[in-house]
Image (cartoon, rainbow, N blue to C red; front, side, top):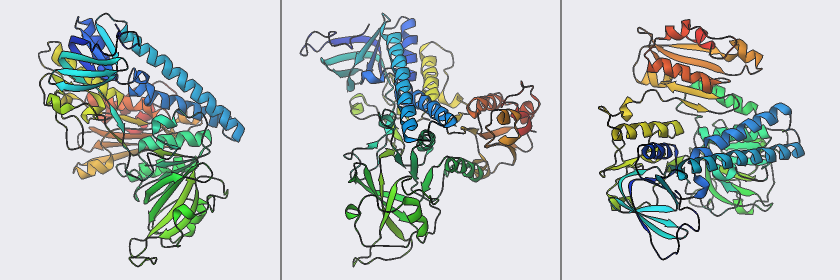
Length: 538
């Protein structure tokens, strides 16, 4: 049953009231799976989703699936040479966006009807907020709907974290990942604020489409949580695609540029060349980002020079950090100001739990210091009979974790003798879909060393894998960490074609406490990337 259409509620003034067994706030993976399971068990369920554009949740609408659709289209454009001219680039991008919209529309409709067509489920489109421990009001287009439920499940996901930069909210051409994946026209130049894995996926994708990409990194270390050799290999891959990096770069302000693009005022630590001109008075289009930067006195790694003055963000040098009397100063650390002019900006500075407007205090639901809904190992909140699933509870932000959260909750509702808990969850893998995918599970060398473990490092160049050569994808490396005396697999890092598939084999071995010799001696089909595990763990 659905009351998400305009005719479902007769008048805006009636304020219908629904009493139900379960209310699920948010249509994400964990929530929609739980709704279907509760319905099959004969429970009455209400699912409240703030936007009709988000039926099915973040992953299918604005997250993993649309981004992977675009990434595959970008890879095809690179292989076919469609990224070589402005005309072919635009055509390839337009076709990719069209296909992405087709896929997300189809999946959204399928997910909606999978729930709304069930007699036990009512889908309400509107923004929900708590009015009491077991009561919620949902603001729909037709008026408020009051819902009272015995059990409530918060599944509202996460939202992009936007840094406090002047002009970031008001300047056209500044996007989160959601907006950037739905552009009609491909930007010729793109600046990405943030060099985490989301930002790097977009850098790789747009570089494959033929966009000139510049990534601003706020400090001097690239991927600081990864092992140095792995991070260096990832960076080399991205630079080979044409992605430029500017390190120690702090964006101070964003404003419209004279040419219709976007202008960023960027402070770069470690540079000592200065001028007195203000950023907003610098003529647009003067100078080249990489030539100017590498011509400065630089104490950190920044970017590589480029010979084409129209490539990447146009950058003009402005000033060093002034002293109190207004004169340039060169105290450590030196800080130089630059103006970057670009066509589009992606803000990729992380995501934060989406709790705004829920009025959780009315239900007695508390938050953690980081703004997530506080839960225990059973995902129970601080209020009785209210749970939180998915990104909103502060756990790993993956769709498959939201699904596993469903398992945690359902194990408490189905009469299990011993509920499954978050502590029972083992070895969460992750994949980043770069031109050469990067996947990892467990500890890396940096973490194993910090933990004081006695380990050996296993390495294998992807070029040594026959299937990688057959696929003409020999770039990358494989690395594993194995406990010295026990042979226990502590972790693996795979920068390799098809790593997103192979990593699950390693995870399974770790979950089963299989020693490294199991993968060393396993019989794999040939030729495959998976058989490389024989040599990696030898």
